[in-house]
Length: 138
Ligand code: CMP
Picture 1 (cartoon, rainbow, N blue to C red):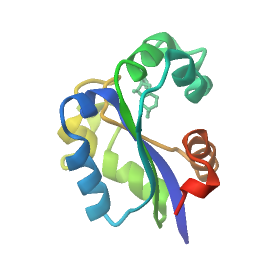
Picture 2 (cartoon, rainbow, N blue to C red):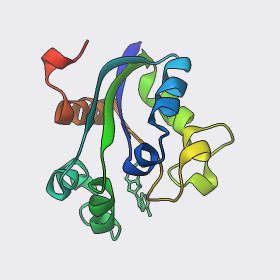
Picture 3 (cartoon, rainbow, N blue to C red):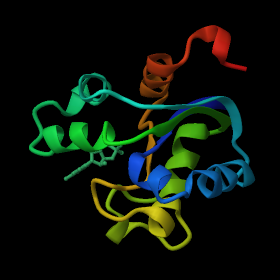
Picture 4 (cartoon, helix red, strand yellow):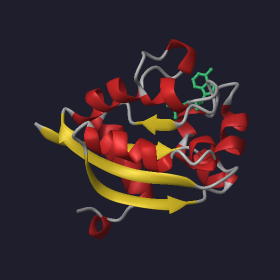
């Protein structure tokens, strides 16, 4: 079925000028952009977004990094969106990401890994709702 996922182009990729190339790869892979904005997370809001990781050792660093510069947040639509997007972006750690994936091409470290992708339909809806109201999703 056609469904949705949520992504962020992270501060390292925006700073490096790769946001356009990444969005182009996403569209060329067949994803329709339902909603898109450039925004800057505060450390507190980054912490809310990644609250599921609050007990992890990398949480404080992740929140600092994710608020270090602007990001692009987007809701994407496609058949099998969550799984196909995770294939497109590659493994969380770019050292383990497959050739041709967004993280292989653009990520610089495990933390600065260029993009986020939702891990389930349920989280895609929650994460999309974190950035976009229903009247911003077309
Ligand atoms: P993301 O897919 O957005 O989900 C959590 C983020 O935490 C991850 O990408 C990385 O940016 C970051 N991170 C930093 N260290 C780790 C780690 N050891 N394992 C998983 N994610 C990490």
